[in-house]
Image 1 (cartoon, helix red, strand yellow):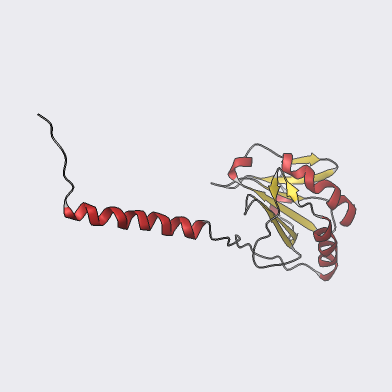
Image 2 (image 1 turned 60 degrees about the vertical axis):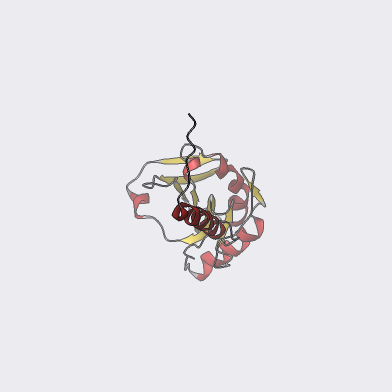
Length: 161
């Protein structure tokens, strides 16, 4: 004896609705909108360094294409739709005075801050303008992307010591 399962009229109506809902949500996710970030408000001296840095930043980092966040600013840049975000002219982190957690990536020193539920944030140290780089969770244990910023930072933002 063979049993065939019949769909109720209600399930026939809900199935297309659920499919449309999934497509609508996916459409929102892939609509081409760039992630939004807070634009720093640096001093005019730091902003000048940041403007020079912006012109020297690479088109790709860790194999990810440049896709700057919104709003458009010379103080921010991004790669991989928010996987890597750089902000220039950020305030000096309070943790810089108490933390000894840092790394040197190709001649640029960075303070490391682990963020809950997110990838790490790195902030330059000993520079006339502070630059922070936030990495997505996929880079939780990988500082490789920082090497892409070493030459541009060294070239455009002088040491403060």
